[in-house]
Image 1 (tube, rainbow, N blue to C red):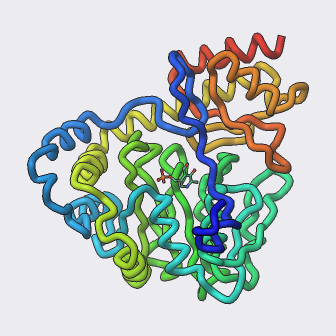
Image 2: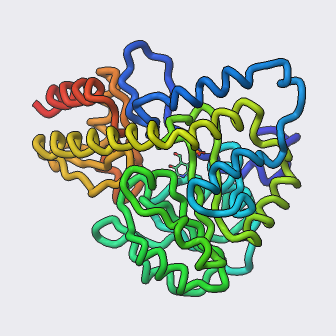
Length: 352
Ligand SMILES: Cc1ncc(COP(=O)(O)O)c(C=O)c1O
């Protein structure tokens, strides 16, 4: 605290990211990173871009990257926006669309950055409780609001809504922007990007941090009709014209173009998720149905916080949220077979 701060900074409650500790032989299953590395073609493209040209500013519009992203999903480059991680894209979207007189709606249990952005930008919000299965009910979003946002699949539950439900939310809110945050969509869901040309109020955000194993590069994107992208560009150019550096643009483009590597590594994560769920259930865990690269699981006989702390002592990191309704759960990122073996061995010791 300091009297030199702008007064509103005193009241900010910032987002707390998952730990990134430097512990040797750590089994790190706490921040939903991809267990297999990025596309070798992405790494090679960044090596090629590592030249004296770094003295020059990058393309402020990331034109080639946006063209590659658009081509992959059958849209125009003018329907794609990119930013420094989807967190930045979301921040611009909150500014561009959610500064409305009415409160915006998002689930009571969801990505905690939404609350942080609402607070930062002075946006009123109303939390919409998940149903008794900890799932989103689209009917709950059919009321007056300043905008709607939720992840699909939701985080940290992993629960997926079908496209028919997304369509219902879009239809119920024709005069407000509905943002579908698809950070985890590539691990088994149908993307709402296919609805972009049909709904002028739909913005879909995605990221290269999860399914393309590039969390360290910080690249996120949004798909929407041109009038929505134009608003995002206005906000971006009022904040930072060069959100993506030369290396990020080159690496992200090559990653997007390497469809084969992307598909095969996503398939591996899905296979590993299925095996992890079965192994946890065998040990008595209740596991929510997940379409993401993590699972939310609770054991009827052990508190989530105690299990999380016990695992940490054995150098296995998972995430625990001291949040009502999910405080008994652990969120476990899907890892490699070796990482799962370490996790399960440590769990067996704790449960014994
Ligand atoms: C639901 C959701 N949205 C967005 C993000 C932000 O991802 P990034 O800024 O790495 O693109 C995350 C990261 O964990 C997330 O869980």
